[in-house]
Length: 113
Length: 113
Image 1 (cartoon, rainbow over the protein chains, first blue to last red):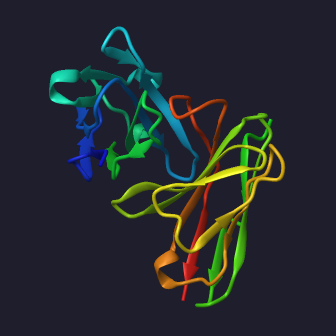
Image 2: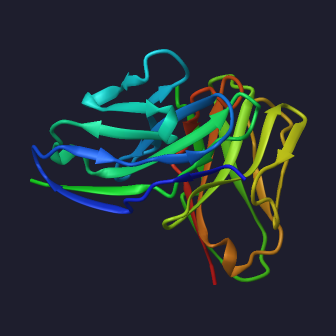
């Protein structure tokens, strides 16, 4: 069965620290990869996505993610976090076989000012 | 353009009661989804619809029913509420299939006692 793993459930960082959130998936074939974010009190919204092409994807608010096919990974990164990045982050994956979007368990990020 | 709206925001139910969670989107999207979010478990797909009159089961459909009589509305029905249905419910919509960006509503927090 398809699955998505986010190994870090809670992350606490100070402002200006670098961020990397892990995401690993188990899927066959060509995949479509997403990171969604839920800021406190707000809707879940798309941060970035990868369909094909350059494996390094840039999203909103300075976030980026790298698709490494050999490692089945799509880690989210940001060089310098801000207090406003405090949120819950979800990795999600589907594939071109038409499988439904599968979400990871989420990572709660707290950035201390 | 309100996007995806959900009502109510919060509800307490007694075991065995029934209720309908409302979801409306004004983006003329064909695809609509219902997810539930439990702590540390990410989002699990309950039901989805690919257009008016067409619905299908997701990963966790037991205890729920849906209908899609119009493009805009996708209500979720709980017939006999159980404590295991205590969760946060999110409705989402997308223009196309699984690889498209999904747009989420604000969620409905349901407590079954």
